Amino acid sequence: MNAQKILTMDNEQFSSFLDNEILVIREKQHISHLTQDIGDIFSLYNYMDSVLSSRAYKALVMFARSEQSLYIEHNHFLSRILSGDQKNLDRFLNVVNRYILSLSKVYCMTVFAGQGTVSLFYLDIGLAYDYRIVAEDTVFENLNLDIGLITKGSGYFLPRLLGIRKATEVLQWKSFPAEDALQLGLVDLIVPASRLEEETMQFASGNKANLSSTLLGIRKLFKCDIKELMRSLELEDYLIKERFKSEEFRRMFTANVKTG
Image (cartoon, rainbow, N blue to C red):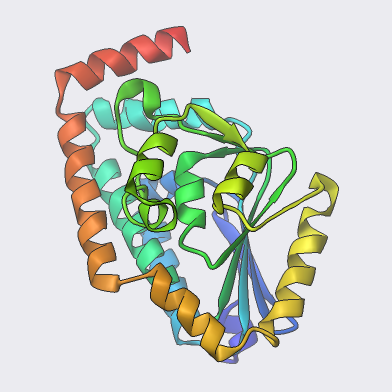
């Protein structure tokens, strides 16, 4: 099977295709939806393995879906876990861990593009990419702040970019705009919402050939220590699971849903 067929996908979760040596992935659903079907999870794992093994592309671009029903989906997912569906939590954590680790092993330029309301979780995922481009209407929201729950993916990339003190401060912000993220270095470029796709593809096309192997190597070196990343992800899993066991968390979540 040729690379074009291997890297082309279109299902309920995402679509992908090759465009001039750029692997373009468009997300359709939140990653948490994968927890509902083992088949979907293994399909994603097989695709990630194909992405890692392929040399048919020189840049990878992810267009994250706009999170229009952010709070509703978030609360629904947490409600299922609190109702005793622990497997959903385990599957979610496993999928996110593998996703982040796979991204960290891709040796080419990777670009994350987002717009509208973006959760802190998706910002954390975006930090696993080399570059982040967002629309000018982007606002980052920390959905877990009011319930005392850490957001998956927060423990590794953010403090490496900002330092521990500043990362601690940012993780306690309820929300912040794209301009603040740009000043902090959490995003690399802000573009008009109507031009997000065009500007992102132009950025990827213009840099996939010009980005020197030395610069790419430096970015990968500074960005990721695989062993330390794995340790951080495992610690996050432990802290999240322990928090779910807390009666205080259940009370805070229930109160937050009623007033949210």
